[in-house]
Length: 188
Ligand code: PAN
Ligand code: ZN
Image (cartoon, rainbow, N blue to C red; front, side, top):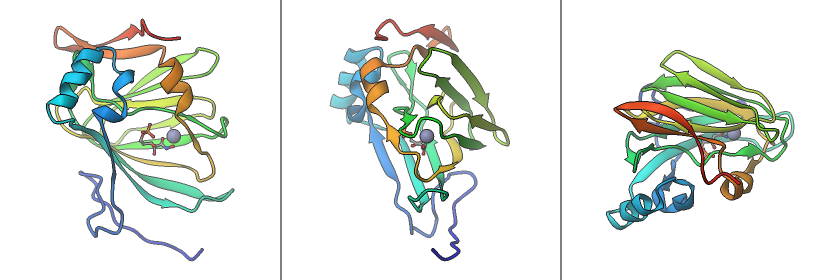
């Protein structure tokens, strides 16, 4: 392909020129992944809010190319659990990803198939390197949208099924006004 240029806002993460339209994910798109399924059902009935949006600013989808874009996770909770992304492994498991926090703050929750777990908090100006083999989910425990820029090998692919079926080993919920990490009682 030819060299390519695109704009995105460093605070909101959106493409101001409108060339790229965001993908939106609502509670109904990941209802079974929340700990409090009744709260998730109620949120759906009360208007099914958007949990997060992401902009794939480029995906050349060939080996040796890069895909990049922005993710915006809104502030909020389902029950005691913060708004979060679905999370996934890459289909080509051993492919890495970099996330750079533009605004807001939150966590990157990561785990390997072998059961190692790591969680990194991100503030504006901080980056996290997600090595190959690590599933990744972004969680907004702040009061503002949590906005990140990401880049990964374009042929990584997204395996959502493993997380949908098994869940994450750990969850982040709010207790006494603060985020805490707990074991997921529904993990299979
Ligand atoms: C990101 C994610 C994006 C949305 O581009 O796809 O943050 O999260 P889910 O894909 O889990 O819904 C990425 O990690 N790409 O590989
Ligand atoms: Zn990824």
